[in-house]
Image (cartoon, rainbow, N blue to C red; front, side):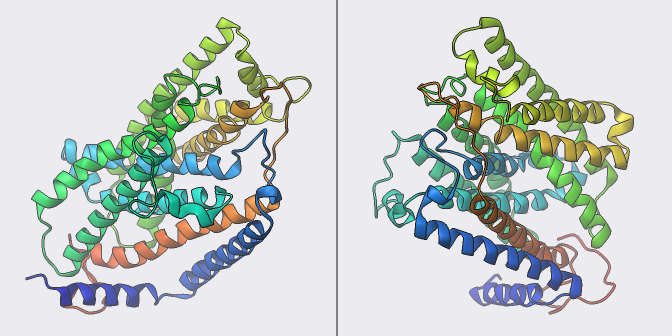
Length: 417
């Protein structure tokens, strides 16, 4: 019978696992802690002086922070690329690694919330949106919806991961009637977090570049490309550095699904470009600034075309079975699609949506050192969370660290949790 004592021992032993490791593990964790310290120092400077230390101004009030937030929401939502084939189609090779996608979602959501917090000019007033303490202004505010869905999705993934690892630790099979509904619930929840994020942009009628009905499906399509791209590389690293059994067919199936979402993403991007360029209205000025430059300002042009070309190249590599199942071209495709979506969600989404401003002036925005240092600290925090979760999860998933064994034996045969 599961008791509170068992759970306390689970927490204690988990802490014991993550505090022990080889030199490479300590070096990696130390490097991440150093980046977090640098980011914290930069953020303290921002708190002291205000957002003036960033390059954001009245003309460009969203920048590097919100660009990273938007991208990482997509990474978090991409966990359903494993959930759907695993639990909707009951495909066993992917079902065994679904927990890794949920752990990636947890890390991405923590980074999302971090970027939102550092973008707040007066974080001391954050309590105003806390339910019961402040006034969340729900359901009128889209920001309120975003706060709710992001935190609910984080709690959902945290509970599922903790419960599955606890069952593996106590050598008990999980209760399917409890886990399956929660895992299936994560599908609409994952869709909702990126849809609501898209609505934050889409609902601003005074920003024509964002005021498009297909913005939400574009967000989802790009998310289902970039998130799995990160996951595919992580799965290969884990297969080489741990005893986890990750089958080739699972990796190649995710790559095949990515090919479909890439094609849909490119189609939606082309549809939006056609609408803007063919109509030729005054609102085309934002798209023109992004793709061709405006009034001699061509800062975004190389980034825009790099994003498009990287996306097209990655789509071709993933569409052709021969290159999709070749490890070299597969990994090149992952890097290309990651770069394509990352540029699109930053330089290709936020800046042209705000430039030129309502008076026609062009403010050239580039992230300051403070923004880059703070962002590095937040990314390091997410990497650290994912590293620590993996450090504890892998031996539990393999059956090497359980309540009866007490410590992971050397060379123990893998077992299913």
